[in-house]
Image (cartoon, rainbow, N blue to C red; front, side):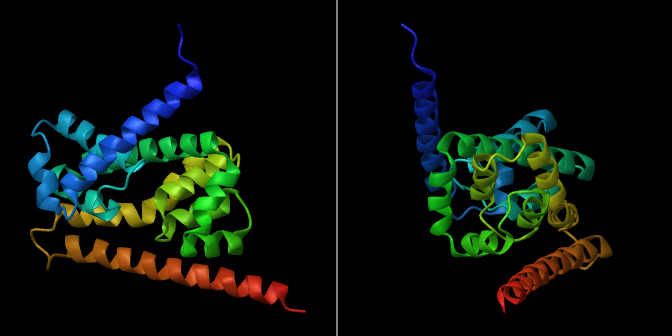
Length: 221
């Protein structure tokens, strides 16, 4: 007897949540050194380990993303670190997008209503196109709920992935490079990427403020 596909998906998600909760309690309060201590010494196996963590994050946020960026920069050569991080982000975004498609727009929007920052952002943008997708990845918003939203709202998958990866790039690459030079925090290799990261964060805040101001002006008589 074949099990209906919807039940297979539900069971798989339930198992993923259980696994996520296990790792959440196992890794809560984790630091970069802890991640590296669990990482296999083989580069290919280590890459798979990091990608698996990103996949797990799509169901339960176990480890802060910035910590993963820095840890990848510490462990891998920079080109490897960037490639592994892009692959992990791609997997995490894809899983979130598919979960959103499965949940449907109404249920995802109910999640957004519980997130003040996300609610304010989408009230400001009022769109599910490339620009909101790109901007949402620059801002410090709930990463996986954003993926669910664009999946549930019907944004084309290729467009979603492209603009999501473009959006994370300005904040991701500086942190990866910072991790690669963290042993020498006074070096330009550490300070310049750190300054870029701060600039990106500040710029993101200004962009959101400008968008909110423009919306307020549009509403004014």
